Image (cartoon, rainbow, N blue to C red; front, side):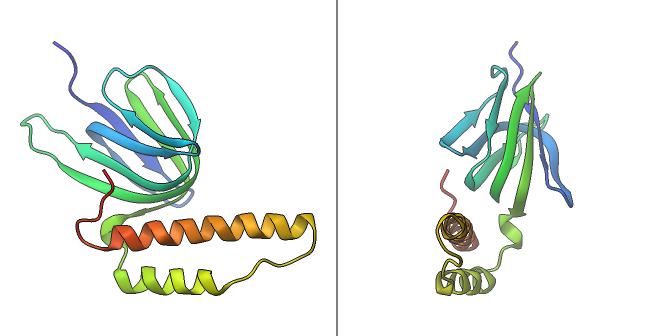
Length: 147
């Protein structure tokens, strides 16, 4: 009989956010979404900006779902364990609409600094901050999970 769950861990530099059995995970890689099911082949990928979505599993078939806003880091699947080492991750249920909207407004008001290559780096950083803020706004609204 095939295994129905795999272990999923989400870790940031400051906290361990998840360490549970899941039946499915959708992870934003730097070049698009990757779906994970039990028995998936090993992979190592760069984490992008977006929504990480998991379906929890347990012995009785009940579970639930959770979403996280993530940005940067790596994701590895090996031996039926998905490990997400994120530079930034926040559970969707802790993101409030007012804070998310305020963050987006603040980031949209910023302009890149510097000249030449420094300005390009500043613009890339600003674009990433804007993308993260947009993800948080979307996740803060009830029923707006992308998966």
